[in-house]
Image (cartoon, rainbow, N blue to C red; front, side, top):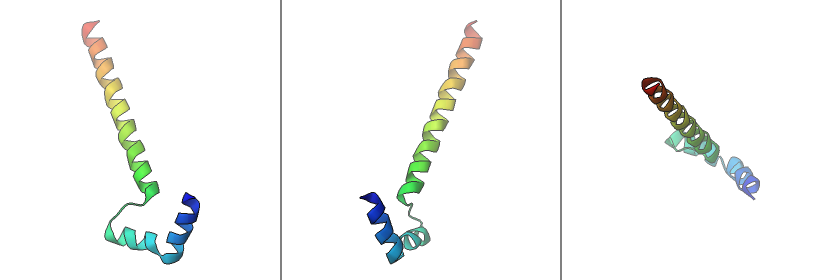
Length: 56
């Protein structure tokens, strides 16, 4: 279903219009969310390692 919507958007040039306006497309939003999650995981691991080193 999403593929059909994306096809329609491509045909109408909606994706290009959104990019010009500065709005993110669905795929860009997903990538941004993944980057934030990875950042949070790295931060958590770093804090955990730091605590372990301090208390060991």
